[in-house]
Image (cartoon, rainbow, N blue to C red):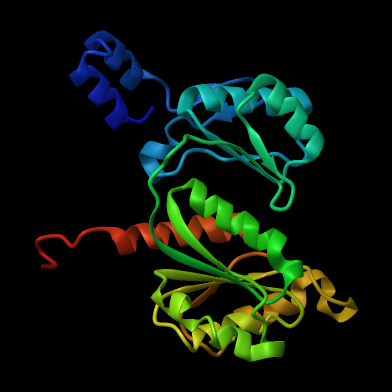
Length: 254
């Protein structure tokens, strides 16, 4: 729960004032010994803590996931394996797993989604990273349009999809090989572009370093680049931009 939910429960008589006081007196994290759960991250940043699953001991992962589920009512886990999914599902039966993005999700139903984020890939081999970005943004309440396989080797495919790309509050460009897609999109839109280099490519792509260097050296303006294969980071940042774009103007701005 966040502070607003607590206050609403007090207003509706579902929580006593004493219970609410205990909520606000809690420490800013929960000590588990092997981990310190950041239970106030949503209040500070607008986003609850996300679980990076890769490399975690089985018992740690299950415990962290179930504690966050109890605290937040939903949890997002990144870079999970099918085996980790089975372990978590035994403790949290409602959790779902997407093998493409490798995301574990325990999600509230019928969440409203706002704004518009366009997520584009150069090729189908980039879709796994793009889906990590897309589903992260959707989990955090953004409306996402997927525009896949529009790389520069067939520029007509990108130009045929310009309308939803230019209408989006933010564009995520996911590309391996030489990584030129972000530069092309950057020259066609007025809103921010988040470039995501992927490790897709042949030997001289150096596991995504070639695309990374292209993106951070782009001559197009308004492009920010995240790390190689970091779809989660792109989806998170795109959601921050999208939320800002959806905020009503203040009286001062009016």
